[in-house]
Image 1 (tube, helix red, strand yellow):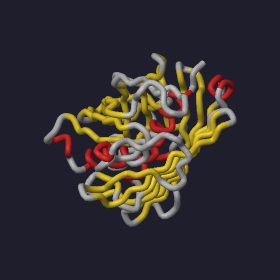
Image 2: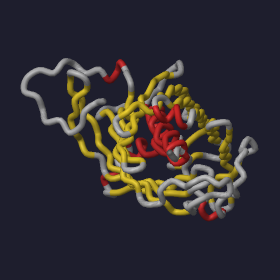
Image 3: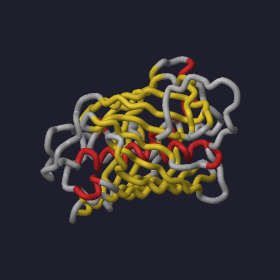
Image 4: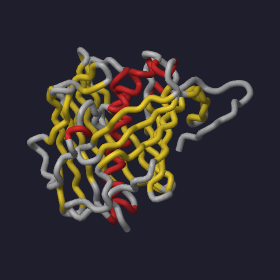
Length: 283
């Protein structure tokens, strides 16, 4: 059973969710949440999230632990941290991104640091990085977004009305090894069932399109994730907070879902009257 592509993708998806939450919530104390991950309908991982945001800066943490079959076969753990500031739709110089994977008996850290370059902000390998692969050419690392900042920026674009003039917004993402685009379609309002109540959400269709760094097997002998475009869907609360509640995609042709476990502010009032048509169901 191959697990490498999944160990790279789940932190990306989960990190995108927690980064998105931070963009719209101002709090004096860190916000702590938990997400459940399922793969093929079976439990796959738990994610603990901590978000601290003030004065336009962000400090994001997530801790992923596999369970069920993925834990039996891989024992994967991943811890990611993003610190910095976002302006003009991009992380600013001095921002950083670090993710450490523990897989079987191996531990590896991917580290990104942002600095001012001649043509904009440039993402470079940080001093904590223990991977052996070389960075992509500079042209693929200018003006990019790391996996923890991507949803922060996407949600800010929704607030600013960017989709009023463009049906699709594209964000260039770099995870320290691969460069891909996240193409986001204009959000659509939907109604979903949330336990025994209903919740209005914004549904955003996404497409993860590989650009560079998807070359079959890397210098460390690991399989790359599927290099075909990967569709996904993100659900956010249809309010001023735009809190991500669910992320859906597929890995190895099986449905993969990252869903918030419980969040008091998401508990809607009890449903009354005729039941509206539901387009999704909370796991």
